[in-house]
Amino acid sequence: MKKIVWLSTLLIGLAGCSQGNQTMEDRTNNPCGDKPNCVSTQDSREQHNIAPFTLADGVSLSQIEAVILQQPRTKTAVKNDDYLRVEFTSKIMRFVDDLELKVEGNNLLVRSESRTGHSDFGVNRKRVDTLRAELTKAGLIK
Image (cartoon, rainbow, N blue to C red; front, side):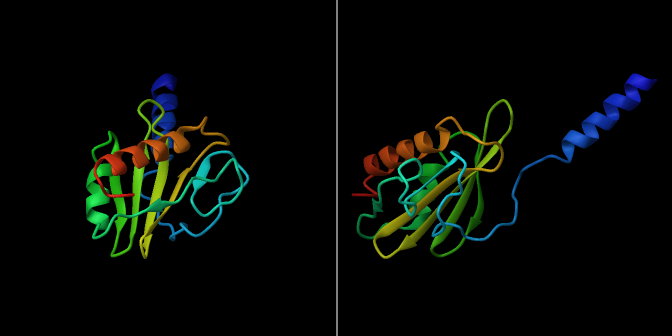
């Protein structure tokens, strides 16, 4: 009986730790924090900086979203005319990372950050590198 109570308490507690679809403001213009779990086109520090994305003429955020959502365990959390936030959930531990994109003229501001933990072991940088390759292949960025 004690095991059942303990297990039930544990499961309820873990269910409360869900990280899905948090309400957050647009952070695409903000630099990353001090933790090595974030990359951004707007951060000049070497460990966080990623090269700018230049959009091809006539590209819409919906086209970019369609490319992103082809990746596994992704879902759109927020989308409006010039801003998109997509959540990526890790396969085993179910950690959630946020990829934020904002269109400013012919530039695409990009920010990818882990919600939890100190280091992401380069996952966000790899994600953005993959995104750059996929968008280039699709002719959406120059």
